[in-house]
Amino acid sequence: TGPQRLWSWIRKLIPSPSLECIVLNAFSAQGQITVPRGFILELANTHKDSVREFRVGMTQLMVDDIEHLSARFQLLEYLECCIINTDLVRRVILISLARCL
Image 1 (cartoon, helix red, strand yellow):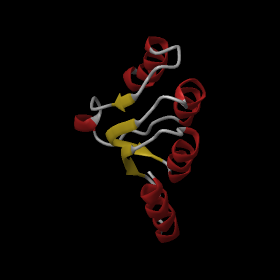
Image 2 (cartoon, one colour):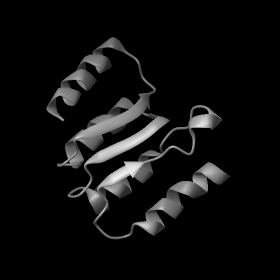
Image 3 (cartoon, helix red, strand yellow):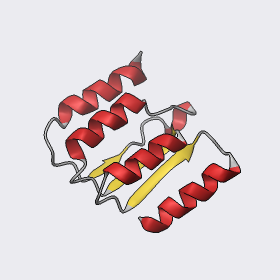
Image 4 (cartoon, rainbow, N blue to C red):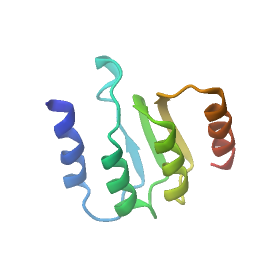
């Protein structure tokens, strides 16, 4: 399907470390779409030392993925996304992570 092809297409466009800002607005009008964990892992492996902003708007991330982004992207200053898991304990963790950004 279209959205599934998007993730591999993005990886092909940015194959070497250099990406500083990820902005994904394409899915905002299509409802809730989830960023695949494999995409996040591959992106982190390649661009962990350069990404400063991760803005995926209304695209959803799992709380574990947000924790992974915060840990792997050493220069991350700004994170924007929707959260799938709204458990209160997880929210407290996210607030703590956000304060570290």
